Image 1 (cartoon, rainbow, N blue to C red):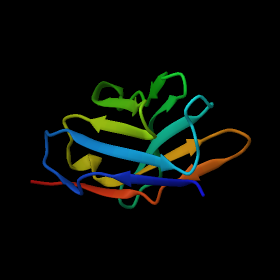
Image 2 (image 1 turned 45 degrees about the vertical axis):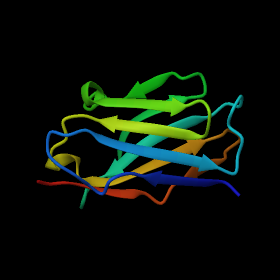
Image 3 (image 1 turned 180 degrees about the horizontal axis):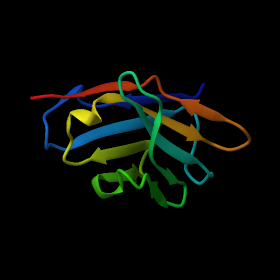
Image 4 (image 1 turned 45 degrees about the horizontal axis):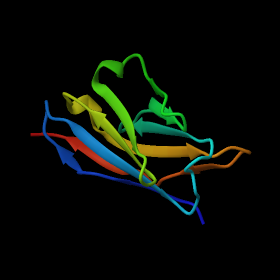
Length: 118
């Protein structure tokens, strides 16, 4: 059974760096094609695409967040990290990761709430 789980601090102070981890289990993605995406949903708003990384390590970022965003992977395991620098209250949102392992198989995590507040 494939599981996707986001983890990280629920509260971050303004101007600090938000760091979240997405752990994928139940599927061997090493050596296989995949596309992992980070998405967020601010309160009362729609989904916002943050960025993605594929099995080759290529990264793609939203133009509006690119200057503050970094997505990386842990090649020794099935973990992916999202870092968002210089956060403000506008970065308060539910953050999700989603992985596409091909053949229409797409899996979402349940999300993790991040609040930016002093």
